Length: 269
Image (tube, rainbow, N blue to C red; front, side, top):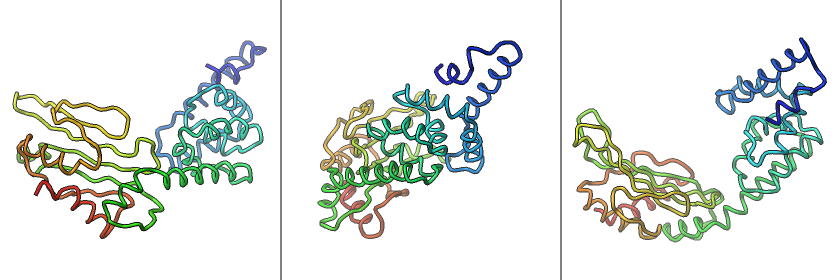
């Protein structure tokens, strides 16, 4: 592993070598913490790592050599924010395939001019991509509005009224998600929980703008503009009735949320 090779000097021997190996392994454990991303515990671990020149040097080498380095390694470099760390980060920002992931570094980054430039550039590219996304034009058509949507990232539940038992969830459970900042900007998923054979089994149909798809419910796939009719047909095929969306998360609120929900479910009523 590049991190270990860079951290542990080949010139060491005996007790010094063992001590350096121990430090390297402890650093690796701290780079795999399970604390929440913005938690105090994670912040403290990352800041302590960023204060160690040996750790920073090894992380720089690992990040440069990796196409998809761990977020904690990127965070250590964003806290260090030295010229060498910025140089290691720059190719990942320049490539731009995971802008949302890189934007999360703002939680921990040291606000130096160089680091601020990387983060603001990422934010600007995300905003530009969102404005140009087909999601914006689509939702505006559904809402009957040309009002600019500065942010568009929401999801709503699709569940059946019917349930397999008194203390169980709905027989059909699903979700429609739309995110203008993602190239795979919409995705629909429905699952059926089946207890008929005395065992717990889940069968699903899912599809969207790219990404994985499946159709174990044999409902077929469709374009996003045809989802209301698809849901109406799916309701009849599955012999269920759709409940009102119980969870509606994200940027679409108030009247906009109600109009979108009415568009989605009105053919099923």
